[in-house]
Amino acid sequence: MTRPVAKKHGVTSAAARVTIVSRLFRPETGAAAYQLGALADELVARGHQVKVLTTVPPGNARIDDAGLDVRRWPVLRDKGGNVRGYVQYLSYDIPLFFRLLFTRGDVVVVQPPTTTGVASRVACALRRIPYVHFSDDVVSTAAEGIGVNRNVVRVLKVLERWVVNGSRSVLAISDGVRDDLVRLGVRGELVRVVGVGVDTDRFAYAEQEPAKTLVYGGTMSEIHGAGVFVRGFAKIASKHPDARLLMIGQGTDVPTLKKLAERLAPGRVEFRTPRPAEELRREFSSAAASLASINPNAGYDFAYATKALAGLCAGAPVIYAGVGPLAPTVIEQDLGWAVPWDDDAVATAMDEALSEHPDPARRQTLSKWVLENHSLRSVATKAADVIDQAR
Image (cartoon, rainbow, N blue to C red):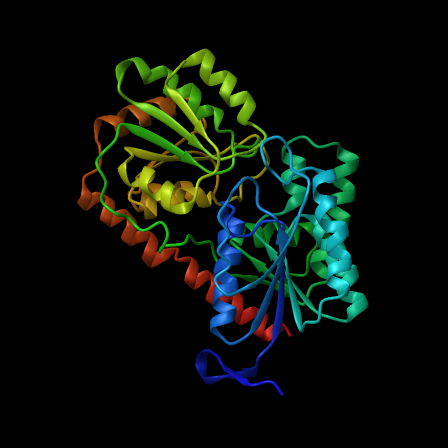
């Protein structure tokens, strides 16, 4: 017999068995891993039984599942440790289909990519289990933006529309994602905007010794166009001989960026593999500025650069280059610099950041803004409310 679970506004519901499906989950870094971890914690706090079907993390990453039932499957990864590409996706998706067939539950939460969505929709249909789609991006739009073959994009659009429309509800992280889903052909009444957030506990500002660093923390792919920071830094490196550009993360652009850095600013740019949130927080908390970008040539103008929120929460003003909904917010809320995706504009912002190192009071103001406006806890609460209504 199930027991009642208290909900917001005095409404109660029976405890549910919720399965979260994602190739990314804690301890891997990245917005998806953090947001699903927070969602799992919120669902457990409500009394639900939560099972996570995910992957074995790369390297020697420390796993702390904090009481969750997390089932990890070994998958293929590229040289950078990413589960990206159709072969890598299928190494997760094919076993996932059978894992879902033998999973008892009341509702499934599905994270992109589309191949995972296809496997999940078919398995859920066979088991007659509803699913909720967590749309932190629109996969077909991203593929189109980075120049994937048109025929492949057409197929992706059809499959993504089929997957998302088959869900009981859709969680979108922003109005931009919602609008793009509607343009794709997703029924608007399915979509609930839950917002975008950052783990304000793990990234909270803690005073550090100031460092002459500019820190990029997150994925480096064609969509982000992080090369603009390497080129911009090279233009002002001689003016700031004790400054360093620190690039932390993984992604398809890393090999190219390393070659670019060695050519333009040898010995001045440091690349690190993805690091735990606590280590990123220390780097951000001492940096002159954090860095985030969206390439305006990628056709992904609605994307929200979550990595900027992590840096801001840790007290680093952001240098934001390119397009996206975050740019006007940076200006309106005085969060740093919002500049075109242009080498000279980025160089000017970097020069100013290194010359105007933020004091503790400035850092605390930035961190407080993120806590009040983009807490991952509030996003998880909204998402859990939708899931409670979907089953």
